[in-house]
Length: 267
Image 1: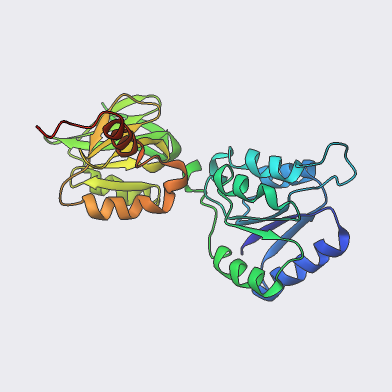
Image 2: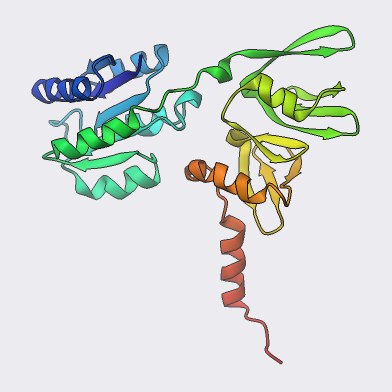
């Protein structure tokens, strides 16, 4: 059952949005609230699969109101909602670019809403399901002791010799006679992507990627992973879905700018 959270201060609009969601998915569980405080409470208790958010939830507020926009920005900070579709709507067209660049919203609708387009977008967005697999644990046998490690705390893994090195927030675990492929199957989570035949990475831990030199830099670990030449194309295709939080081209752009500022002599 998919869960949809509607955050809209106008009662008639909330009812209309609820009706649209039911037309798209009759079995969806709908949470419908008028303000961001109640929305936060529901979002943290549930696993919402799609957000429908009005940018201005307190229209009488002096100096304008962007409480819905703030809610969308803050919800992106919640681990499980980093990729969840957020559909926003408003009569404040100037915020459109901000919603795409800062919130990475799935779609921005300007009021009055195009009902048919909203249905079409919702049909695609509602296919997504918020992943809770990051909250479970896997178990490693270390010197006869069973160690529990939360899936979200695993950064990467690579095989060296006959040992698997698993980087985590608690340090590196060395597991003899275990392959990265077998651990990938055990984790069974889409956020772990193989970057070579002998290694994989947690895409939520990627800080930047240098595709030219085939290096992966992590957010919270000094380890630099290498992308295999054979798997480079497939790896880049897999991470392309998560470009909003991965600065893949940052190094290339810097090089281009430096080249423009300091062109090489032709002599």
